[in-house]
Length: 619
Image 1 (tube, helix red, strand yellow):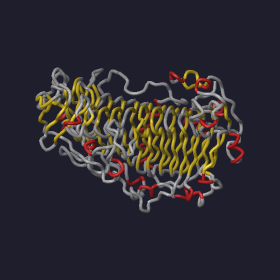
Image 2 (spheres, helix red, strand yellow; image 1 turned 180 degrees about the vertical axis):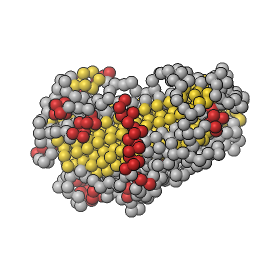
Image 3 (cartoon, helix red, strand yellow; image 1 turned 45 degrees about the vertical axis):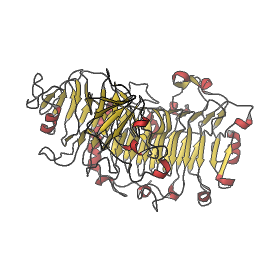
Image 4 (cartoon, helix red, strand yellow; image 1 turned 60 degrees about the vertical axis):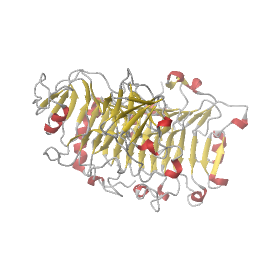
């Protein structure tokens, strides 16, 4: 594997930044069982050069240096310099569009709960028809699709009004947009942008109606702001909730400023050396943070050394977390759920998107839940040396997606009820060990996509070329289906025209996996167990309903693989309550071994690795 050079001093500094996180996290195998997401705690006043106390009812003219005389959050943001801390009293701050460029800390006071909201309460409503109410609203956020969105393909399912960034809530309940007054219901709203009027289809009397007034909460810019030059140190944000923002809650900028109308991932553009990007803001931390109900993306993050830990990312319009052109990143013990609430088709959404030539992004022990119309975690274009371990992923279109990238370790994860548990597309060197797949297919695919004439221009050039998309390993995984109608459990595919050119398998190793599915007397209802890219077969595909048949057709693979007759209840302790430890050990072969580096990631002994199939160590 050929990697671009890295800057050794920078790596050392990032190592120091991540060391406390690594030491605080003891190695373990499989999803830990928690705690995940924000943890209630009592925050001590941190050591800082200057401390500013703020409150929802603070005075902008107050110095903010005394607990009993707080200033406003906006005033404190304008005053702080690197090394300072802002302490937020509990309550609701209706604020946003704040910008800073200093490496500061923001956290609650003691055990109080500060909530930043990007909405105001709308109180002046007029009944204008049967079940229709209207209010005037000046602060609106019209928008439009990105230029690459294919309108002809998607307009029937995604009307253009869905791309506007405004949000409306009744008693905290999110409303979906409608295209006209005639389309209104109790669960929708309509905006006439020319008249600056918001319409709802539910009587607002006796209810709290909130409408967005800010498109962002906080932007960490690299430009000069408040009379200060940017210091390249990321903010440390702990224990704060951000909710109801029209576009994004948090934006960590790189070399350029960008808006909701610009493509956010175009930095760098084209193949680039990692020493030339990701250095503008280093060491951003989100810890025990909640971001919910954001019109587009919870947060855009650029800069090496990013850590997001024990946070909740929920109910976002398209994506949850965007990590762009960054290295040495850690996401752990987060809950990421229910993104793509706008259901925008053709936008290629994912709960977590790792995109554009990131290096060494570690995603460990997270809960990724309830994303039926989107990917769970997607490493997209030009990424190197990713690690995805010990995560629990349920209810996604694709749990883990690795596209046009090179080098990833996927181990110890549990994939439950996903259309695809994992999908490796047009990539190289994906090493997948000891995962548990429950009604979730494992998929490998390569095709002829390249940078020549591509819809996304230079993106494919950042990954392996068409003839380099190989070197995958799939070993000691446990694939279980509830009935014979689910299949294939494993699919390896490529189109006919590529099959004639590339007759070497994309997988270098396929061995030691266990396939469990109940037998059926109804052969017509039985789906393939495995589907294999076969250059000698019609259509370049061979489908088999048993492992024995596969071993006969492809004798170099799955020599130590096994197929068992059973289902989730015969395999796991209690699948109905999501306990996927093995009911009894599954036999393994001494001829199938796990590399020491993967054992280190999982925290397994040699004995555990040698005797375990799937994500949970043998007893």
